[in-house]
Image (cartoon, rainbow over all chains, first blue to last red; front, side):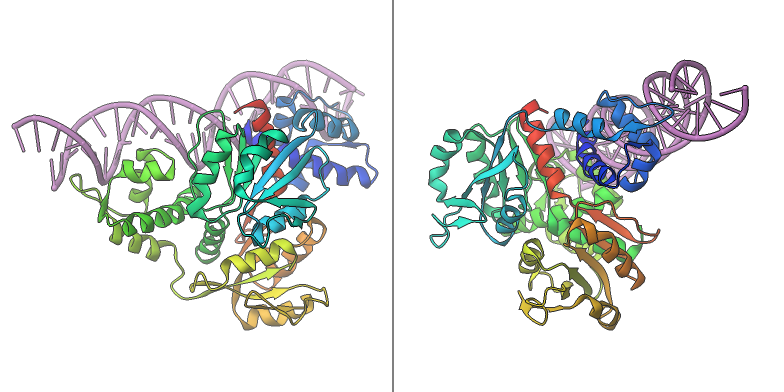
Length: 203
Length: 203
DNA sequence: TAGATTGTTAATCGATTAACAATC
DNA sequence: TAGATTGTTAATCGATTAACAATC
């Protein structure tokens, strides 16, 4: 299921492209081709999401885009906090700034006094101690961690205490969180080491 | 195997911590705990890498760190190019700058004239057309793609033509590459959507 | 109808976890 | 020896892929 949800987000992006090119329907093998996976995978994913096509025309593009939206988008705006306004933190703020109305980074936290109270890519930076006030006040449910590995667990603990239910973690650290909190760690160093390894050794 | 290689990089970081704390040996369940996985997984991974411990003392920390190094580090320096010096590209340049002597980003490419010939976090930025000269000249074997999704496939094609064997892709696009080229895509948007989804729905 | 695609079940594949004899 | 851990095989789990009857 987790993998399916991830792919739905990919499918939607590809479908928006397809729609822009003027196609009203798409076959599983066409979508599979641009997604770089198998056609059976696509059909199974759509089945899992409860979406049907027709053997003669394939899947209706606009309907499918809508279906994915109702399945994976928040019904109302979901708010996100980012902790650690370093280079990576700023890049992520820039990337999401104004892009997703339904999923907005509404607060950033960093203890560097040069950053506190500055507005970075449309998002105000607060000191860490303000978290306990701002996170509940803005009803923030998701945290992005872009602090050094040493402080990542501490930040995660504090976010969990403030009732955050999902964490996207960029620190190279395995976070320990209670059940009911979802964590995805994107470890860039490990990813690059892996790519370098297979570049040398072959797949 | 791919997953194992990824975890070896994590193990090493954790072991360096453990070593710093003064422990000479570690049991599989101890390493598993800090890695957030099961002890059987750790033992299996180490077995796969051909490393042995002792039932009484566990695994020798310093030896294991060394063993992981010879297994996954390049024997000599491996060079990396980064294409797309936007916010994310700069963050990655900053992150790796001077960190890994064996794995260095030695060239950046971007067509923005404000960036060309500037040195960004220790790395000179070249125009895209210089790729065909610089990549072979510096014997670059790995590429990092941080351009917008629309141009990602084009950049990937050019890198592949220049004999690059591994790509770490941050563009939200499924890259098509010939066999023998390893690609890992880190799709930040999809990751955040997934975290937001499970934050709402529960795991 | 003839031909292609969907929806879905069964088979396969790979990775994780459990179990336990061998070892210290 | 008694007790705990390793190394490794077998069992489980989950995800992907293949196959094919039903459908258009």
